Image 1 (cartoon, protein in one colour):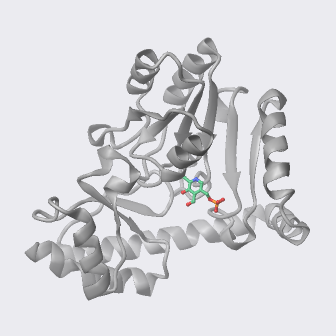
Image 2 (image 1 turned 90 degrees about the vertical axis):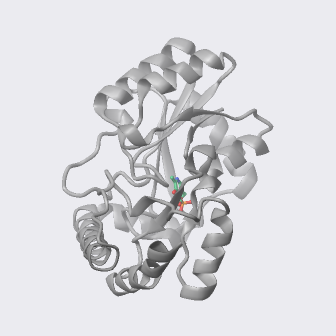
Image 3 (image 1 turned 135 degrees about the vertical axis):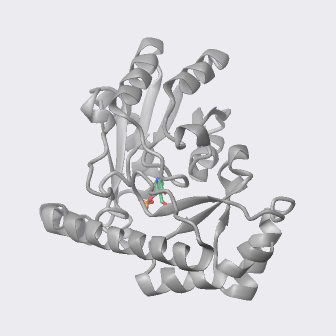
Length: 271
Ligand SMILES: Cc1ncc(COP(=O)(O)O)c(C=O)c1O
């Protein structure tokens, strides 16, 4: 299974549970952490036994997206090799005005994953969905049925209501996203004197570790948690390429986002 590095840790864990071998393709700061078809294809060339490849755009943890051209190139590369391409697009509705492309805009192949948890702001319902060719979905349905039987009916009905109300629900989510992003930007300016780069979508800011914290990023994050009451996720948990970074979520309330930055700022000045 080919997964992004840095990338959402569940891809590696789930592949290992299925006793698959995990290999990765690089995402790169120089490219804004966006999908790079050349790096993706190089990984396919280097690993001819890949049967499943995973995309995540906008990405958790980096917020990096994928262009239509990149998606089309990657889809072609997988189709030509008979590889199942899984495109995790759970953050796609959380954009900043410019909608971000879906694999579905450029290909009918593969499987697209979405969730009520992010754009529709209903993580407690535990409902997501996969859209793709029946030949890929039929075995997944069998595994799902034996693993969890089904999503509960009240949750399915609640998600249906959310989907029917999508225009207003998604607009409200994006309004909140922008408000929280602006709060983060102002707090960074005020307390850190820097201006964070806006993600392509989602509510994560992927930031370099402060100088001096690189030796032991976990110890730094634990200290920040215990002393300042702020939780940032060390980047290495998303793969080796995340070693020099931290993931900050600005999904909390604007007041909490502003307060969190105020509390963490001294560690950037002294560490
Ligand atoms: C990239 C990505 N995919 C999938 C999920 C799973 O979301 P859920 O299980 O809430 O639908 C998450 C949750 O954080 C995520 O970040």
